[in-house]
Image 1 (cartoon, helix red, strand yellow):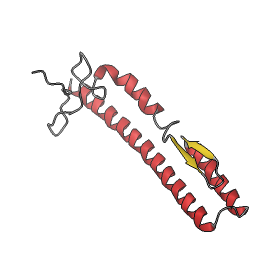
Image 2: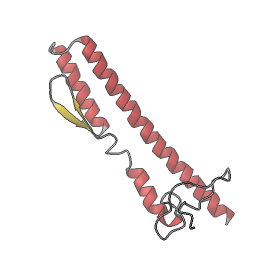
Image 3: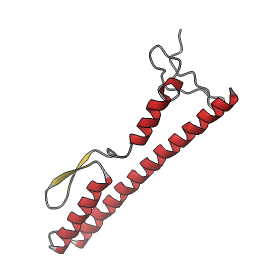
Length: 131
């Protein structure tokens, strides 16, 4: 029976457990023919769509949070609602804390993508230097 998993072997000697692409030996991540496509995807990832979630702020208006810019807009709305006394300081604190969590998640996602890109570039450099 044919093995359906990627043939990439990690530095620790274990094999990648992702499924290989149809007709290929490797998964999309480890396919040397996909290096340029992967690099473009890594650069694009996280720049626009991070989270795609409808959020309702206390004024009843819903916004779609997809970028850090949406969180900044939400924070301004929260500030205005607090100044207009339409929400309590406790509600404002809870909403602001949630926004800060979303911002941290966006930052971590961006950092993770950058680290993946660096790790991939280093593995490609090592692979080329071993040949």
